[in-house]
Length: 370
Image (cartoon, rainbow, N blue to C red; front, side):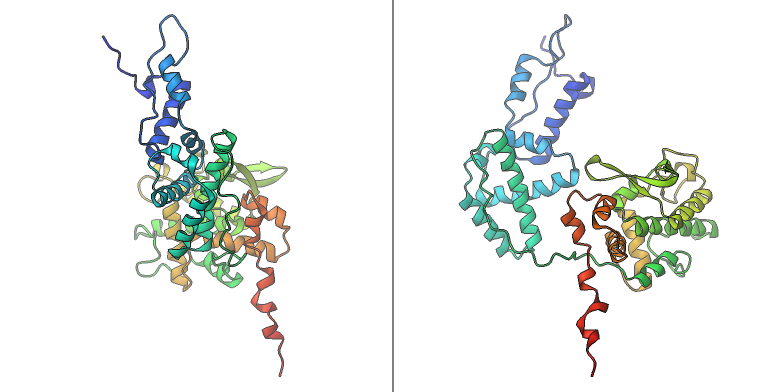
């Protein structure tokens, strides 16, 4: 009787990991029209390798293009790179992953010109070229190609080294920190759930703590949502810190601002989940307080948009990160320290928030006297 392949969860851990990687690659990339997932069978009762010889060989034959994509850890990077490569494949007309190996610089230049002709921003064109270049760098490492055809292709000029995400002024940031509890008349800002006094008060406490955490620490909204209660209670060298799970699984410790720490403590006391050390720090208001789910990045975005819209300057959560970074640099924080604080891999990303050379109050316009 023929044996059916075992389900992934029934396999040894090592084989499960390999199978899951190849399955995820096949489904997410849509680069390989043929299956790259091996039919893995149970090892013989007498011992031996975890994979059959056939399965081992099929894994050995996985194209390096698929290996490259499977090795991308960040879901956001996967989505962005998938978009770029599908665009390139569609433009050039590639049908098989192996056809990437005959791509020339002329193909890449033609694609770049097509992207520019579609009125995509310079940043978008550069990001798509970077995605393609990353693939070819891997193919070079695997000796699948002799050179990277993206190298030497001119990128669109950078319009400005200053970020496009708006940063709030100091007076606007102060208004926003005071907003919860003051602008809840009528329907209230987005995220206001429930009409009873207790729910409204708890919401105000949560939103005050949430906004302070963003404005005083420059967190990404995904990082804020990953905070657990114990992450906000990390004592290091006598100073309370936030333990932040950043991009690429990197952990950093950020000193907790006293104002934010006080608001978090008040929120936890009111919400009643301070003893749930492993539970989410910021939670939705529905259901039992000790079982309420953690906020999602989309919920954080809506909360920020709701409060800022009520104040007359509607922005998203990332604007609060830009505000924190710009404010720190304006007050003479060392840019290398700000890079570490924000969790940037490259200091050039941090420089986007350095607007000290373009402050309106320093413009020669205000030096003119008649």
